[in-house]
Figure (cartoon, rainbow, N blue to C red):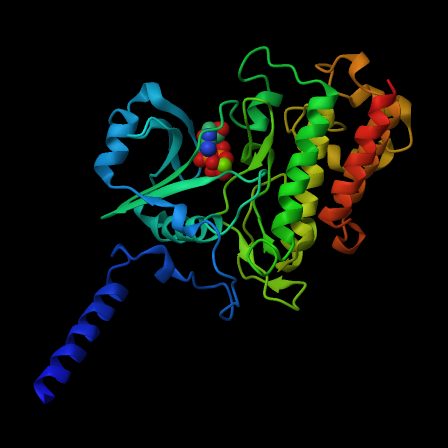
Length: 355
Ligand SMILES: Nc1ncnc2c1ncn2[C@@H]1O[C@H](COP(=O)(O)OP(=O)(O)OP(=O)(O)O)[C@@H](O)[C@H]1O
Ligand SMILES: [Mg+2]
């Protein structure tokens, strides 16, 4: 009897220490319970978790033709992304973690946050997680495939002659706003979620140019009753940083609203919000937008020439610029909530119907 207890205890101790010593030991998503998210949170039962599939390395190799270059669709900070076909014929996007040793611990954390959070979310404007692979040291995330790629590439004309009219841009803005409003509400996971890396390259487009937000690896759950969260490391992407968060490290839902305002500016002008290749007066649209609001002449000059003049009304463009200006307000308290952005974009769409 005593021997049994000792051996069980030893086994447990061994498996626990193995787990701690070797971060690559595979654990099911339920056991990840990502650290650094504050006190344990009262999460409602996950909605989609049972649907996430777990793949082996062999299945990932077969789906992508051994990661053949002809299936490569992009590269990002986490690694390469491939188009893949699963055994049942479903077309997917497969993101392969590919990081130097020094960055692997951060990559592992991002991977777990991505799976942990995305598997709980369910909204038409968020990219769907199909599954993941954690085979030895290999890490892959499998998503639904978004045929039109990301918004930034489309705006920069990377895919050739895809010209988006104003109506299409408004629908993308509204879809992205709805996705963020859902994240910021408590309906998603029981507490609001801050995305922290919202940007035009993380807005993916379906065949019909519907927007879906991707990349939740930097997302944070906001403990309830806290409207800000103090962080030691400021994470995100240059050009989309909330200045208040960058200065103080205090993360709020409004940091996403700032980044959303930057994307609105990109949709309006077809330019990056901070573009160092422009002359000194034109480099920073975020600074300029406050002078342009209310001045239709100036506004007309910055509207993306790729949009047919007949596709927009000046009223809707000027309301849109007004909303963007409020979203990129320096103080977070001056920015609207995402739910208000959704309502305002619906009004702007209405204002554009009077062409
Ligand atoms: N689900 C998907 N469907 C189709 N293409 C995708 C999908 N996910 C990512 N991509 C493409 O893969 C490319 C790389 O994406 P990734 O998220 O790794 O990098 P990024 O967003 O450009 O930069 P960062 O690493 O800073 O987020 C992007 O250009 C994107 O268009
Ligand atoms: Mg991305």
